[in-house]
Length: 321
Image 1 (spheres, helix red, strand yellow):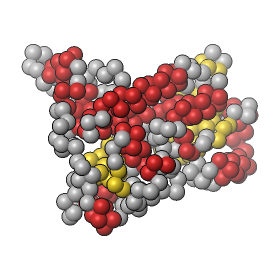
Image 2: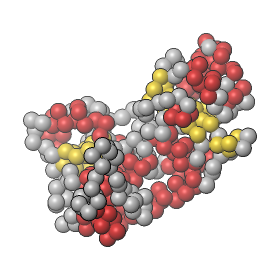
Image 3: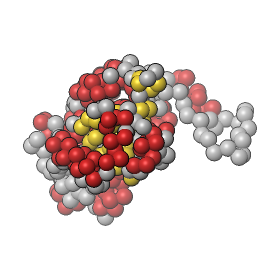
Image 4: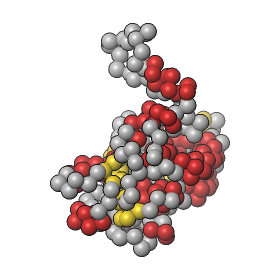
């Protein structure tokens, strides 16, 4: 039987969580800031963990379907049998899940296929909640949703699923690996001319490039290095992906441009060449002028992947040094 969420938190964290509702210190009625508990040793926010675990049944379900490739990978690493996984052409499922039945895309799963598998639970990404939840409404199939956008999200998902399926030891081992990768990224601290290296992250193809902030997976890795992602610091990006404003990019003068495309590296390079040819003003950007424009491997940076993280760390290290 799974322990209640509170039992997974250290005493100090529990005390702080309890203090959030204590009346010894009156709250400022004009404040909208909610204090958070001290992160656990593995960096997971205990309040976020408790909230995520609150979605799960007390007893681990006997059968689970994953409507998310990253979550399917995590479940597989935890040793949780998965009855169904999404079909995908842009994301790589672990080989161990190659023969698992497909339920169509993660954003629009086939409800009939899910019902045929009769899972006790469907695990999906928070970004797909609206479609997955609506699809399952009439089936009576329970569902839970976890964020998968950043490395921090992946750590929370590992901890949550490990607790929900009584796989805490395996979860701890995975979190140790993720922590080691984080430490490598934090040690980089790239600088250009004595200041944190300014990075522009782009995703897309042809004339539809978007800027990626720290809220994207690739952006979350760059943020750990201490580099300055200009999406947030100078371009005013408020979401994970925003349109490119070339005038603002030129003014921000990024030292490095990192490009991502689900169509592959060759397609990304062709799209970049076409973009630079169509808009010569790109040539005034330091990263372009200095030859520091790099195409990222989509399998390493396009979505959260535990298996691909070490390679992503190595690739990013080479580009930012």
